[in-house]
Length: 260
Image (cartoon, rainbow, N blue to C red; front, side):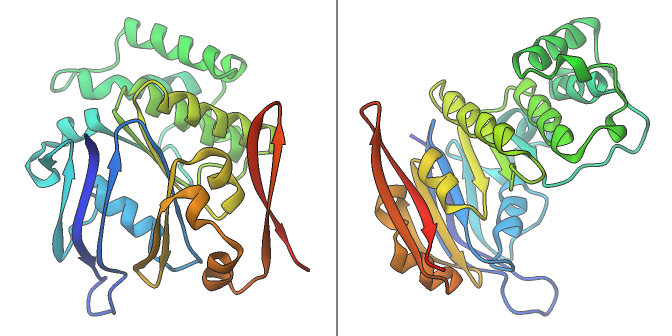
């Protein structure tokens, strides 16, 4: 079953040339998918279209075989959770307040977060090794910590599709690996994870499938191991990169090494 299907999608800002140019793809339930491409290729715009934050000039987006346009905002929030590159709270919320907001799609009109919501938020922070941040003001923690908190909120939202825009931005190496491992674990529970990234090695380590965008068009799409090649990376980034394959503890692992 497809968790997401995009058909003949196009979008432009005003009278500018198309940022997304007639693209189509579908994503299986419980898969991790990376969207790669140079700056300005349309990655973030594509995510915003999938979330319904932008309206396409043409094309159809379906979430679990239902047109996105037919879903209410609350219904969308139960299907799709978003982790942006950067997020700044308008008010002086504590970290646990931000995470507990992930339960709002399940509340009635004009309802606020409940004590049960806060208990679940605390459990999620503990699970992500962020319990120590619980009472800290959200706007005073580091950018990397804010990114992890937003992922906690998205997980508490219990959406079936998790959409992340460059999720490792601002994270140290250890937290990058922790996050990538978490995405793989989530996919094994049936959650679909879609992320944009500038790191092809992260796609190789984590993603079942990858999509390459350039100037708003899909230049390649398919199984990650098949399409992330030195030739394709040169086509995207104009840089010579060698794909190194090795085996560790009977697991095959690939990574990227730039030829400098």
